Image 1: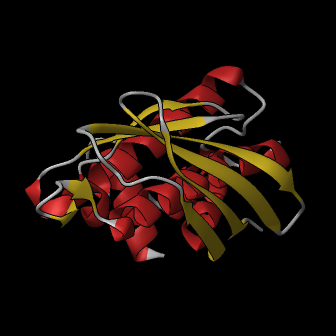
Image 2: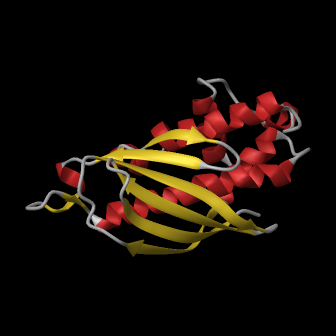
Length: 182
């Protein structure tokens, strides 16, 4: 609970967050509030998660239907230094986090009427259950983007489809992941 409160506090520019304040944050019935929560999710993924910062990911677009994450390769992320291709572990990580953020965004649909503070606490408990990654081509290039969407969601589990493209719009890899959302 304290970690969640610290994360919310840091996202809200240092404002102290109490249980009372969490309960008072409006629910998701307002489109403006939903857009703000999506912005907070982007901020968390872009700058609050140490591993994501190390990878240098950028959540460039996030809606309830789709997420787009960009990453640029650098020497530390290469798997084959002679060919300068992106490491398969980096590819699977980007695919997984892309599926995770779209599963969280999609779960907001089921949280109508839930106070935002409680919803953010639920987000902290969401996790990857399973992921499958198919590597279709070597990760050659400098800039990559991963596009993800939810293909099915129930009350507890969401299944997402993710595709990683090179800067030449070549499909490099694709993945399917199951995410605990409830």
